[in-house]
Length: 191
Picture 1 (cartoon, rainbow, N blue to C red):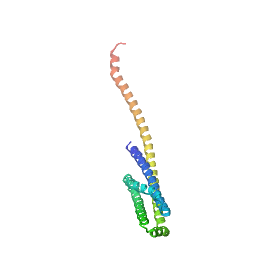
Picture 2: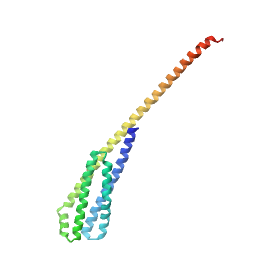
Picture 3: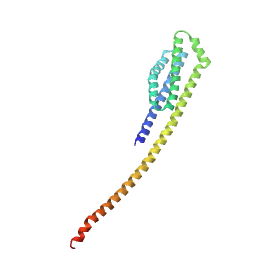
Picture 4: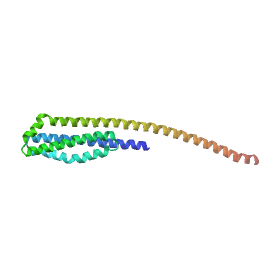
C-alpha cells in the first residue's frame, strides 16, 4: 500500500510540475512577444502582458524548484531552465529601459546580432530537456505503478489461498477435536 501511495503521489506531483512548466513556457512567450511588440511599435499596450508575465514568473519558478526538489536529476535541469528564464527577464528589462532612455540603437543591435534569438534557443532547448526528463520520470512512475499492481494481485492471491488453507485446516481440526471429545461419550451412552 505504501508503494502504491508513493506512486500515486509521484504521479500527482508530475501532473502539477507539467502544468507549471506549460504555464512558465506561456509566460516566457508573453515576455518575449511583449518585448518584440514594444520594440517594433513603441506602444505601451505590449508592455502590459510582459509586466504581468514578469510578475507571475518568480513564484512559478520557486514552486517548480520546490516540487522537483525530491527528484535531484529533474531538479538540476529545472534549475538550469529557471536560470535561463531569469536571464531572459533581466535582459528584456534592461533593453526595455534602454528604449525608454533613448538608447534604441543598443536594443536594435541586440536584435540584429541575434543575441535574443540565441537566448531564446537556449531556453527552448532547456524546456525540451526538462520535458525529456519528465517523460523519463513518468515512464519510471508508470513502471512502478505496474509493479505495484502485479505485486498487489500476487499478494491478494496468496492471501486468499492462505485464508482458504487455514479455513480448511481449522475445519479439519474442529472436526477432529469434536470427534475426540464426543466419540468417547458415544461409546459410554447406550444406543
